[in-house]
Length: 310
Ligand code: UDP
Ligand code: MG
Image (cartoon, rainbow, N blue to C red; front, side, top):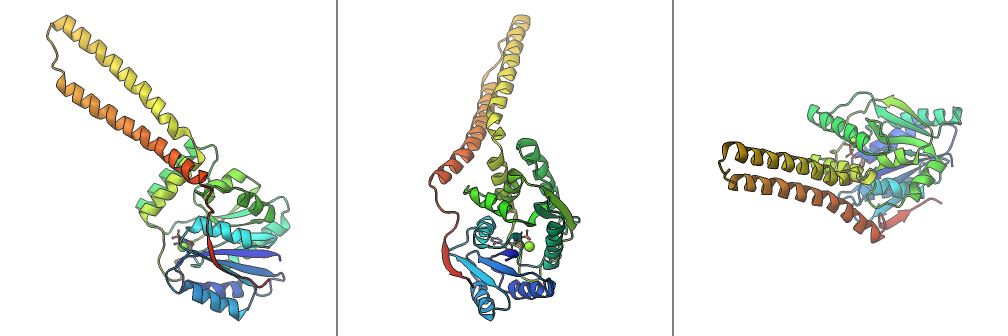
């Protein structure tokens, strides 16, 4: 098998038939065999029955992995890669924002350039609101400052790579998966190509602000321990401030001879230090929480059903 298309699907009953059709059209006469690995990420709509129909129609080799509940896109990509048997593996969304014909170009690049291991697409123009764009930019600049890996802004999960890359990614069994970080961490020669994301074929985006925020926290905490140093940094600042304040109080007493009423200062200091301490405990808590979840060694996903042509 030359190519596996890994497609995460969460409530995509309307998009999947359009996606399937677009794949057939994009790969007609391509001259190599390919399979589609659909991963139903615990959808609540008719996604699974639509996938079963496509599987039975057998226009091309199709595998369907169905999760017992929603485990998230990252888990779906992981499961898809595990079941894929192609020499090249391509990660692509089900909503046709990323057109399958681009995958054909990616395959061609990998065929022609044997030194290239990953072809990744980045969005040359973003079709999203200014506020979201601003936060995404801020996130990339923050994570690139904090972490040891460098993430290319605007690069998505939409990429095609060689089997060895997929095997490296699967070998990382971290529970909180952040694929942009994982890709940067595993390395390999990557070529970036621009693409313009289309409008969703049908349905709605699954990413609201809260989910994106959690994803960003996963990215920062998962790829850097620098936030833990915030406590040390803050303790230095507060110690300096306290010393300066002490000197000021002593001088004022010596010069003017008046006692300085202390309760307002004490309240301000207690509040300030208390909030700093809670902030630092919060950061430590994020790491402890992740260590706890990882230590349970729970699987990244659970399968309810698996359909294969093999
Ligand atoms: N997806 C998933 N599990 C989730 C959320 C999303 O498998 O919990 C899939 C979704 O079906 C789609 C892809 O991930 O194929 C990208 O999701 P979406 O289009 O909602 O994200 P956006 O393109 O808006 O960033
Ligand atoms: Mg989308």
